[in-house]
Length: 114
Length: 118
Image (cartoon, rainbow over all chains, first blue to last red; front, side):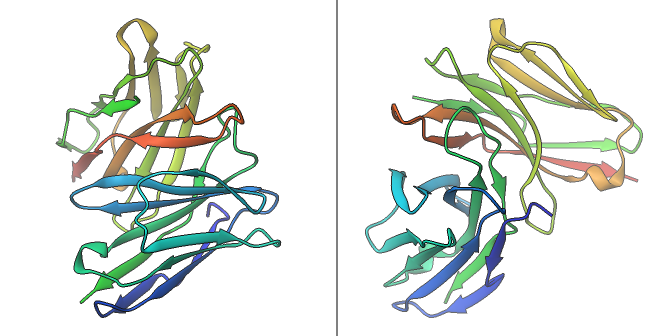
């Protein structure tokens, strides 16, 4: 158990819909990351938050957004869903955001868009 | 740009055999970090090891060992006396500094699917 908690574990939704994925980082970790794992793209970095502020963006679509709340949990919002958004979405956390801190991953949220 | 190459897409070995998973990386940074993660069939990503670019000592943890060679930009992973529970996809990853703040992201390889045959 990495200590990173993600909900829901599985989600099936229709195209055009909006979903929210939730993440609680490890106790004490200030940095939260979101990654997407799909068959064709592999593991891709989406976005990073540090202590409530956005710090870095990767290959995140404009239809996707995220935030980190004062209690440090994070949410990833996916809207206008398309079939191609079906993937495993990981949340990860690290103590800070630099110097090679180990990044621990949650168990992921499986999203299926039908 | 950062890049991680895991040329072995799939490997199958018989239980108790040793197996080595290859990882080659590219980076222009002088300070960087390398990681291995395991993804079992259940899907979670499990951290195995972190190594910084200044420490080229090999590391052993039980049946697992890692060989880091800066001269060849490789960070290979060996499982000794493999077991069925080792069956998983293994990812090598490189940590890049994104800004002066030091924010990082992990650049992953495409993974190696390891199957241990009983």
